[in-house]
Length: 229
Picture 1 (cartoon, one colour):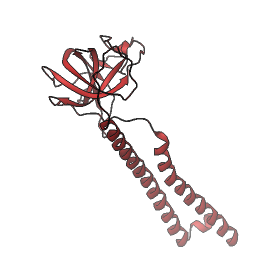
Picture 2: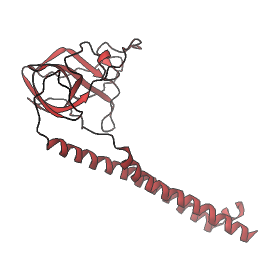
Picture 3: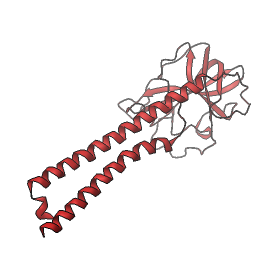
Picture 4: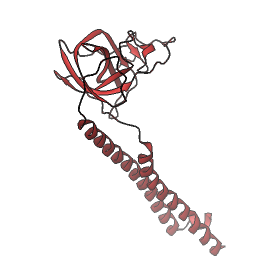
């Protein structure tokens, strides 16, 4: 086999196979991204078609129910959920307790980019006065208290869990904001539902082509080596 690989023809063929494998890998990644974009767009359209309700905080609601709440944010309650990347940048989800007529409800206002230092929290722009938030219901799990903070600032948490929040609130869910009036200066986080199978199917398609290219290279190399030997 080594004798065949030393020939110019096989060196060129090997280079071509390597280029094809790289191309298939890039196409797999592109297909994955396209599938994700289409999935997010479809879900956003489905959510936009929902009629938002004004729930009571103690009401049990299915996940992704569209809701609308009005009230004022409690700036002392602000918590940053760390290590939440968006569009390739690291950052935080910003949680704040909304004191509404329906009860006290946690709202994930949006996304804030991380600063240069991990031991200090970035400044969170405030939304003062009355605010109306429209978003979707997400489950507020019980979780476990964060006993070992490992040097984290007091206003940072690792997950959206009741045990990590300073106030339990009145609801067993929180609201992931989609719109806010007045406008929130934070970046809205897209609402996504897990659908890994669709993404995997696109990615695997091109990875299989890469595997075929590798298998074909070994097959023809072995056949020609037998003919030369």
